[in-house]
Image (cartoon, rainbow, N blue to C red; front, side, top):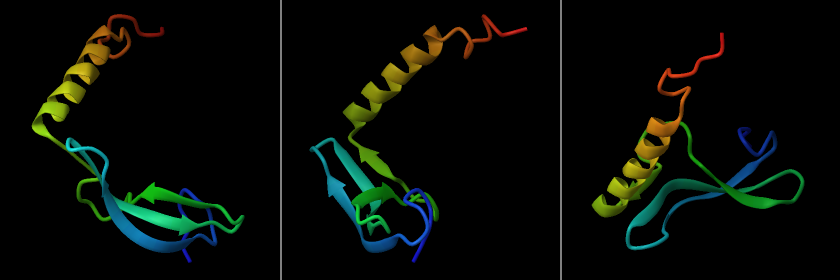
Length: 83
């Protein structure tokens, strides 16, 4: 029995990784049954290690997109802070 995102009484059925595409892999996921009868999955958030691996190309695309959003975000750039 464990808690976490799914709540108390959650039973971890399996731990797994899945290759979503040639460029993207989700690592260290948990398949769980919840007390309400729902089956779902969550990333393993403790213990370190990568939760996602991506190809070099996809990593660069994600980094570029995040950077563009960050650079354009006024609060993140200290250009407009609430007084």
